[in-house]
Image (tube, rainbow, N blue to C red; front, top):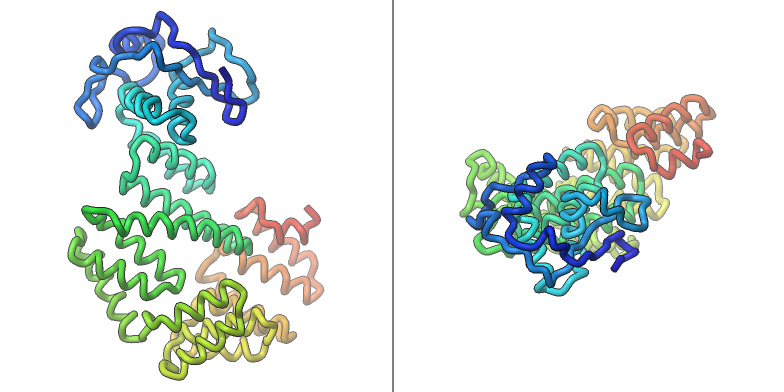
Length: 389
């Protein structure tokens, strides 16, 4: 039987596979495959796992093939098929558990091996494959804290790449998935210290200061790293001293993020009346004004944010957009160059340099910027559009 959607073929257990896994281990050793013969984390040796001839064996077909060539049947295809079934929930719960035990008997070191592979793919920008591998592992090890955290970090990295490319809606979807995972991590019992610490930074980056403070506070009593513990304490003090955990701030951010800039401005102005020296508030106000096309007011807010200590790459990039629309190209170029020094591979900044060059009539220079964007983000839609790709 074949499942066409995921290239899975289910086979009746052949006579040669019946019996105990020890026999399979011997056969595999002759072919030079796999890792049978080791014991896995449950203490169950491979020989303790018995093949059940009533359960069909799933096999994943190689790409481009529609039928199984039995001469090419390998352990890799069987394990891949079982992992796919586990991840996609294509079998009943009893069969899924059976496949899980089967895979762990054949590849007892699969968590370490596949996790390393996923991290390598993520570092190389292959986020889709990294997510797929980690999702498969979570089918084998449900709710494993380390796997949940690694998946959340991959989603964060993917979201950051999308944001740099100006694909904000897609980035938001990835961040929302990461948010759900961090919520799961935050509720683990016993607590997972590293997960709580990273969750705090996730919310910090998304202006969720109240939630960040909550995560860092939960981390302190279970902290397993002195330097991280001190960092968490410092962030909590900073959030509290600047009143960034004020719910009005979060409401303003959420309104603007969801396209309700007027409501967001009302809320952030309320915040600034009480906390006029907090640069984050001026940045949020500038963000709303920029989205509404109020370039001069937006520029003034971003300048105020920078004056109060928020002169980071995001502030400078946003200020540059306002300056470009105001026709102040020289100042816009200066801000973008300062921003690029801080983040040399931020494609959003490089792309804006390209847009600025076009506005100044420097088409060759603009093309160079957009080509650089595509070297970093080959699928960047803005760069492709300007280059006619």
